[in-house]
Amino acid sequence: MVIKFSQFSTLPPVLTMTILVSCMGLITGCRNSMISNLLPPADAQIQPKGMVTASSLPEYCSPDEYRTFFEHFVRGQDYQGNETRLTYTADIIEVRDYKNPSYLIGTLRKKDDEFSIDLRDYRWVQLVPSPVDNSPYTRLQIDLIRMNNNTFRVNYIKAHYAYDPKGEGEEYLDYTYGEPGAYIFEHRNGCWNLTQKLQ
Image (cartoon, rainbow, N blue to C red):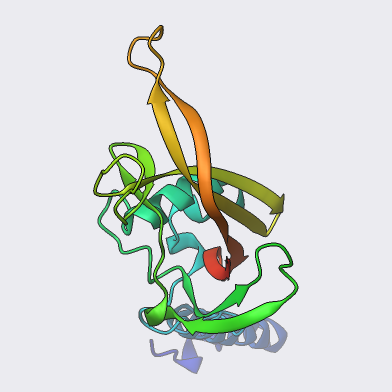
């Protein structure tokens, strides 16, 4: 836009200066607005590509959804096919004593851990043959315990179930056997992570 000063020659000098200063302010304001819209805010945090943010985490990562999280973790993937076991296992897993968890036995790397719980026909199992009922896997009794807002524990032990003859095909826990074990999950980086193994 070209402004000819001759256009203002008939106006009083004070009014001419006021108009020119106002025009310059408008032009500068528009220019700054255009530039600020092109640049991110100074306090904006730019996330690297592929970085997981809190908003991109699944709902089962919520602290209160630990039971749902554990089912997805055991299956190895969620209903959308996203891998869960390796994703939510700490790089180093502490192996501790079951009766005295403060005693550190050793550590395992993520790739060396053999997570021993699985689901078969909606039943908790260990993928080792059962010496009790000659099945290809061993049934387990599982207890999920919320220890605090950021920690839950999964106790497990081998178990034998029997059918209730009076109930219509319903099972009941007959007895448990063998040594108990446990896993500890902690809420880290927005989701639950396997961090300890108790044996």
